[in-house]
Amino acid sequence: MKTLNRLPGLPIERTLAILSGRWKAVILHVLLDGPQRTCGLEKRIVGVSQKVLIEQLRALEEHGMVTRQPSAEDRQGIEYLLTPLGESLRSILDSLIEWGVHHATELDELDRLLPCDAVVRSYL
Image 1 (cartoon, helix red, strand yellow):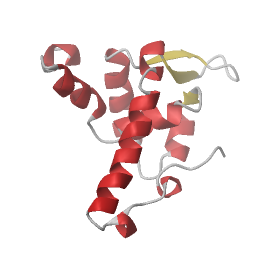
Image 2 (cartoon, helix red, strand yellow):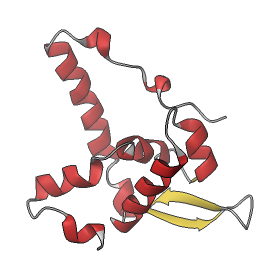
Image 3 (cartoon, rainbow, N blue to C red):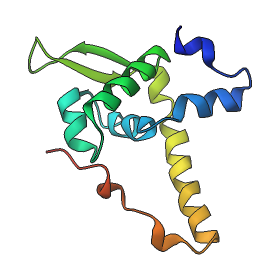
């Protein structure tokens, strides 16, 4: 059964279902920097396993957020990039980050937030 058949009917729940899942939002955030090979994503996202990364990339591809193309560096390799639909999440992801900081501030838990580089490495 395709993932799309399991998406909720309410728009807000649909959006949350697409973004939820282990590492999905982080993968999208990293792909905002540009196309990445699977091994590049593994190196940049601290703690993600190859199995989970591939599962989440496939789900995001099925939802039309990412696509695969031959690597510019290695014609036998594949790289993932955001589709225009995936790129349209940029402002939403930025807003979610801002709201997360706001929420932590309001609950006096700002010290519990991790810096992005704790999970996402810069280009290697």
